[in-house]
Length: 553
Image (cartoon, rainbow, N blue to C red; front, top):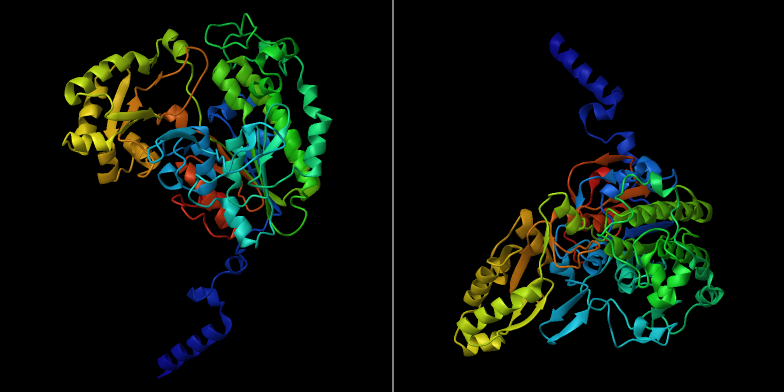
């Protein structure tokens, strides 16, 4: 009886006096106080066109403390971040970052592609239903209408009852139109000496943009392109004089400095600036002006500023990833990022905004250079294959018209002709895939039937399937051998499912972001749901990625 009394007394004492969490019945104080969401005044999305991940590590010792180093040291670095689809190009890249999904869902299957319904080539952002604003050219006839799902910027606008602003800025139209989504207040891009837009957004440029254009502050960049630092210190890059780099028109050698004033007229005047680091500086200037004029981050309702730095892509294409021009462009971009972050600190407040920085694709080193280093690499010329391929089609089908088009490394077939010949679409796909596989420079081929019937989970077929849109993609998909491209023998390019095109940086910084890093694999469609989780808003409507839990506080 005494024992029973002691048990009863201890039980009553425990309930009355011991902490409730001793029994696991309640969450800790810290758990109870965990924020439901983070409400930064501004989200800044930054895409650096054609940025490889190793540009962070390769040029690290040259960067200042306020740009890339600030993001890495004070933010979160996803070191193993990849595109999980192909083609790895600008339009699909920008769409995927902001929609949280891949071309299989959002429909932007290339910069340009063959529309098999309309039977014509289309541009990812082109829309003749709208007029140019700020220019008399067709440069403003754009809209996001080919993107079939919402973006993180759309969802933020919907969540705030359209009170939160979205402004998108890039030299390239597609670099602004697609991130801005379907509901952006404005998207601006640069064309022949002016920042322009589309009547999809507005009928007239705001007065601040008109003033910015009339002031022509970008005229200050019409100057020789000299290296930011002593070029002899750029030991992370190849020799300045080599045969792997392209030339501006009028140049005899691809060597810094490049005399822009002398080359101005012959290279499109203001358009020339896009292929120099000054194009990024112009973009930063305009983004900072938009931050001020549009009062982004000025109140408690979260706004979104989408900025794409396009010049890195133009420079990479012309000079190649191992060039001193590319290195100098990134060192100057680092300075521009520091300028932008200082303005964000001043106008929005440090700790009051959230940033992510990534790229729309990476790039391959110049194959001619790789070959000279005895690394497997080569070039493929589709035109050289054309005679053999035409002979194959004539012999087997009596006509070459059975193939309607070749776009983004995909063959599109004419189903009417196949039906008239009493053939099976699947058999024709397989026959063409087997034939093309015999050609030099082709690593593998897949058919649309395979894309439909299988559920790939890793490797090249997984990447192709994520880029395969049933309504828009072709019948036979071709993958070039690793290190092989279809491109001139100077400069770098991209677009493949190979790892040198998929591995890009992903950095988070600011409100709601942990400090740290991970080498676990993350994928490009994880960005939008991560930001949505941070903000506590709906995921974009086509989301296939997952929030990166390690990033969020």
